[in-house]
Each structure stands twice: as C-alpha cells, then as structure tokens.
Amino acid sequence: MIHGEHLAKDLRRDHGFVHVGRTKDGQAVIMRKGTRWTVVPLRLLTQEAVDTIKAQAGISLV
Image (cartoon, rainbow, N blue to C red; front, top):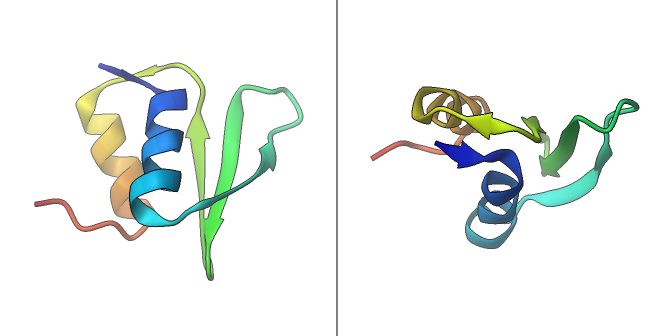
C-alpha cells in the first residue's frame, strides 16, 4: 500500500505532472500534465488503485 501523497510526488518527479490544487474538502490533490488531469486521493491506496490512477493519467504500466 502506498499513500496518496507519495504517489503525487512520484507523478510530479517522474512523470512531469504539476500540482494544481486540492479538492474543496482537502481529501485529494488535483494534478495536470498538458491536457491530462488526474485526482489523487490523500489516503492509503492499494496497488490496484495506484495502477488505475496511473492508467487514467496516461502512464503506461510495465
């Protein structure tokens, strides 16, 4: 399991995503890269959830 904060840092560092802001309730981070947008929940995530978020963000899974 990985925390959403760590996933957001990985997306920013390794994949060039930019932190845009947080949701109104503060429970998720909004990120973008070009025309791609993704929302990363700030809680513990299963590997399946991480893979889903990365796939929706357009990051190929090896």
